[in-house]
Length: 274
Image (cartoon, rainbow, N blue to C red; front, side, top):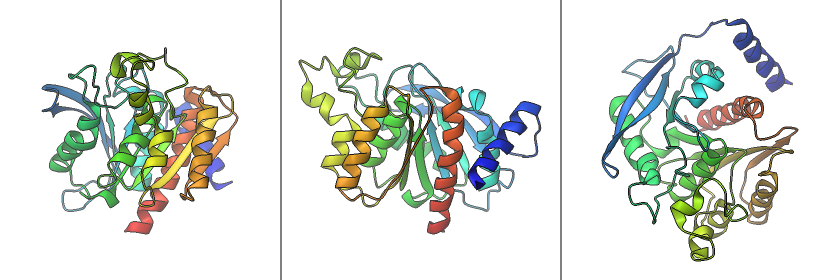
């Protein structure tokens, strides 16, 4: 009930254009040494932001065909979450179809290195952050849900909380979609690559006890089956996690709803740490 009321409140704020929060939204230019280029990101700092205070950071990834501005344009409530939960929120650009991995086929596409190492370092150098894993969470939608979980599993020294909204957590059932074969090669030629880059396989090959995990997926989503598979794997491994399924498809109305649930979860976990 509390989350439902909170969700309705935020929807009313968006519908009527009310702004009762004072968070600051900046578009910044970061640099990726591994790719040799500048990459934009949206950074939201809470109204309380001060250089003499340290803040946890939530990294929020966009989906396939999106960009760094998707979340702030399609779900402006994230500005309110920055204030409400006293966190910095970072929405990086993951390119049109990077899948947030370091591509063996396209050496110029190193978005795992960028997000998990270069961007985190840049944010810690330029903002007043809690600069260790206990102060970092990462989540995202669709391609970004895959990215958030895979990066968190592989870089548990960087993140302590991981989320996914409608995540493409197993890419193998979709060998002809979303330009993944351009990054990994064909699934027929490189089946091990596709396996090693699927979250459901990473979850089986890595210990995950140090991560706090939340997943949401709509029951009409084409990724619903693979999310259920991941949920079952985590249950079998006895990995604590929260999995929320609700009516909905692969669409922004579900993600606007989901980010509220996930920010509640992230805030609660941050509170337990500090």
